[in-house]
Amino acid sequence: MVLVDTSVWIEYFKGSARSVVLKKLIHNNTLCINNLVLAELLPSINLKKEYKLKQLLLAIKRIELEIDWNEIIDMQTQNITNGINKVGIPDLIIAQNAINNNLLLFSFDKHFSLMRDLFGLNLFAGE
Image (cartoon, rainbow, N blue to C red; front, side):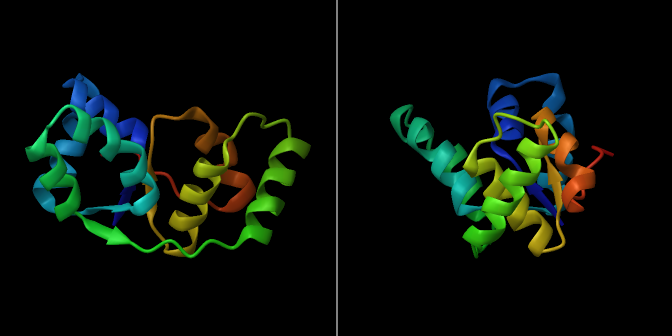
């Protein structure tokens, strides 16, 4: 199962060539989302009145967030110690969610690949 990050959805909404892989995941129903990603996407979708996109997002399997704030603090401390700066708390929560649920994370944000070895984060290769 692949947890799809906000950055990938944005490319999909733009009709980018990079969204071909996401289309396959949707077709094969091998993707999931969490409430944090939805919270990042739905406000602009609501404003643009893109109801089909909203229906698509709400139909995808949703993974519950169980945030361990001490672990988030430890992750950010390790990031800073290792020179991985400017990782926002939302992205740490998304990484934690993927790790704790044994999911592959699909993102175009480069800092996730920097965190991969530090935290055992499994990234989706896009195949």
